[in-house]
Amino acid sequence: MAKKSMVAREVKRAKLNKRFQARRTELKAVVSNQQSEYEEKWDAMIALQKLPRDSGKSRQRNRCALTGRPHGYYRKFGLSRNKLREVILKGQAPGVVKASW
Image (cartoon, rainbow, N blue to C red; front, side):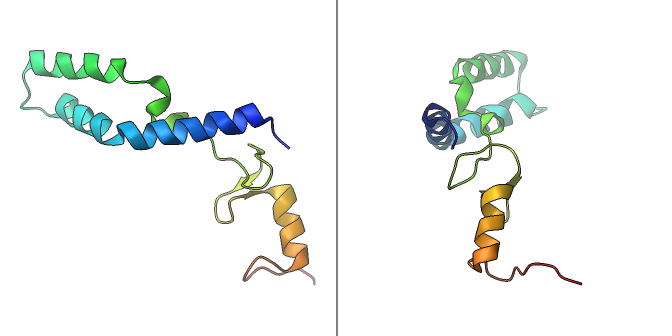
């Protein structure tokens, strides 16, 4: 089980991302626009830097839904390799069977 503070931090980052995503996209569009004037781009860059650091999508880390483990994460299932194995062996993962040959 991961530390609860780490899981809580990820929840906080997800909330911040959801809250500031529209503003961040808007400012990035101004910065990358070729027709924007230098002053306008500069102001947009400064405003972008003033947004909370954790509001960026790239700051988030995928974690297991059951344990919060950050490594060995399978996106398709939302679980880490350890818990995924347990779920598959119980037959609770749809469309997945243990290989045998």
